[in-house]
Length: 257
Length: 193
Image (tube, rainbow over all chains, first blue to last red; front, side):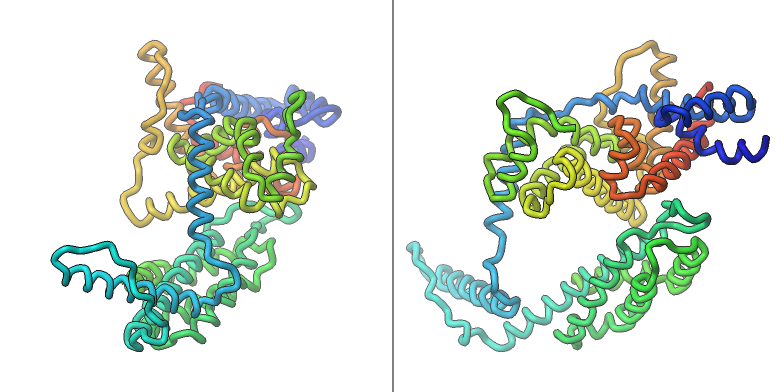
């Protein structure tokens, strides 16, 4: 009695969920009819399914008509197209162009303020070479810090996702599926290398946190997709012990200014 | 999955046009899939504003990534996958905010949802059941929750769920089994089996 009970336990849930058919359904149904414990389990799970089926959200209607949705999506696409950078422009070129535009705006503002009767005038194009070195330096410094903040925030997402995973692998007991976390860790580690190449002095204060996050990401990057639950728990405890999440949050805020 | 509308372009035709950059193809796709995608997002997030936002993001991504659609799955499940992944990402952000700031009380996140008007006792019980169900769903791991939503809110088969979530069929079965068990525990005291 015990062996078929264990074997059929998962099937009782699937029977309650209404996803069994054919011989599987008939076998499980017959077992439930002959096993009072399974009958109680089945009744309990059917009550859960009944509660879900009574949830008004199942048939909720959207609050806006489709024509409004279409307009909104069109607007988003227009904005996205307008914001898309021109292809094949490196970040240094983009940075210089943005800096030149900002500098031109400052010049224009100064000029307009100095006039009593302002006339609409086009800004004089400012050659990139004329941009003061200290302005360019500060822009690069701020951009490096923003990149580091975004990197830390995304790394924290990966570490949280791994620690919270509870999706069991179907082939082995006591293993969980960490999904895309190893791939995302590897991508982030590539970005980490670029942070060091860029402006190391701009993120010097974050060096210790960056190093610890890198170690944690390397551990995640080395994980197979199906991991022993104990290994994930050890990783989580190690991160907790080092208070890494709190330190990431504080450092991200500092970098973002 | 694909609606058969006489004289209307098929989902596949529309996706092919989107992949070629034809924005005109987006409107008929939205008309067909809007309510279904809305209910997926709403069931997952339990907030109408978030759900509408997710539907918009889903169609924006559908247009931007249409060239990655290889035709191996129908457009409907492909859009569902985008919508559920967007919902999971949104849920993570909400959870992070809750962890950093003040947690919401159960039911706060769905205050904008209207309920029916049954008798007072039934309404109280119905409201309690609704809140407890929302809380129990909220405590499920992300993918177990997605499996429950797609099965019991959208009535997908296990194979469709596996395709939509990119999971193995066995994983879908064990996720559904575990999720229903957890929901049962979470609803103890308000259910009379």
